[in-house]
Length: 196
Image (cartoon, rainbow, N blue to C red; front, side, top):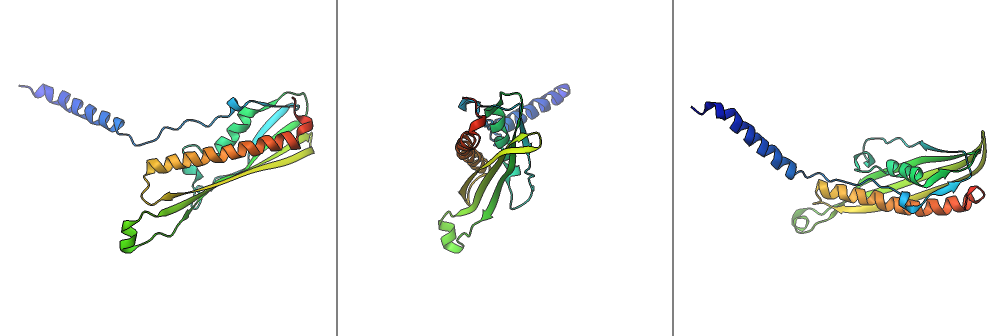
């Protein structure tokens, strides 16, 4: 007599299951790394060209392609947010030369001792290198570069969610170091082209 209700009950049960899955979703939500709040650096150039020279290998030992915010995207965003062309000639080239993160397996203890201790099992090393140039046509007027490196280790019992949080923090911290380097380098090496 209530056979017509059976599909409806299955639908409700399936809906409840999917809702539970959404609530228990282990994925992290990460904010974009932005730099406009740090203020613009105004340059006496007609154009700022941002170039990606780094190609992610997409395989071990490199792992940056698995990051929630990839270092090369953060390095590109820095230039988009902070460098402003405010002249009528010349070109400022900002080249992301490298934005790599490598993973190295660390030795862990085995046997009973290994069961009783939590070792650090991987080390992540980030390196971001930026090349910069002022061009007048094809003539290079000035060059400089900036580099930032950071590393961190993680324990062997780390979850994927916690690992992603470590990766995000590694990118964020490396970019903070790079921001300091870039500010100092741009303001010193390209001082004649800075609009105060």
